Length: 207
Image (cartoon, rainbow, N blue to C red; front, side):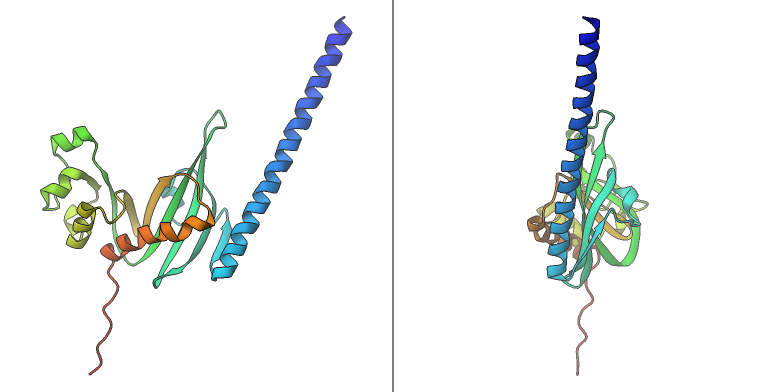
């Protein structure tokens, strides 16, 4: 009887090991197909695909960078990346980061909508616009540097409500995953924000 139990236990162990190996193979194949799909997408558009890229802003996004695509849109260098956070129970949460490169280095800044209690207390940034200060939390050395056009765009809801700047990197992050068909929409969200922070130079006039 004991020998039968031992044999059954050994069989179950072998089956578990085999199952783990099969799952690992499937995951590797899926990852390889995913990378190939992104590589083809990037090649067709003259963009660059990078697997686990090393970038200066990686500490300003959640978890680890899985991959990224980068290119130029409306004359501005942009990047869209997928990030992943895995907890102790191996549960993974995904995030999408969009980054636009600004022409000038700006003060380190974070902006996010205020929670209800914070709105009621009405404390925080002093940009000179009480309606903006009540609606958004700003973390920066001097909130008065925020351009009036940016404040108006926030109040009108035409730019992402949460973002941060580190030097020349403008970063927005949202929860979820990304596929090639979503890249243009994500870029369309970050470009107006970049233009409000860093307006393009006016074209020179010829006499």
